[in-house]
Image 1 (cartoon, rainbow, N blue to C red):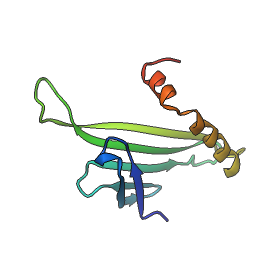
Image 2: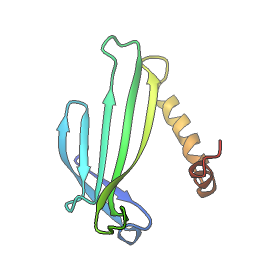
Image 3: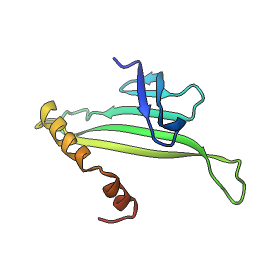
Image 4: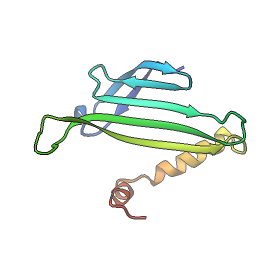
Length: 121
């Protein structure tokens, strides 16, 4: 069972790894957060009750940062980025899902991410 996560984000904390201790658990959901609350990571799973639908696994990273809001620079607003894995309840082994995720991660170059953020499809 996870008790903390290490998260390294370039541009945040000089790109140093930060430890996010587990701060709460409810059912199939856990929240990990830095002591100052500036970074929060939520991992949750939704499983269909009848076992025949899709299983959804969510990893959500939220960073609280200063943004300009109507000329007021001191307002804090959460900025959230999330990733979903949706799979059928049956039909994929863990090894098959890991292989697909590995292939997907290899595509996530800085160039592709910039194109996605530029709304290219």
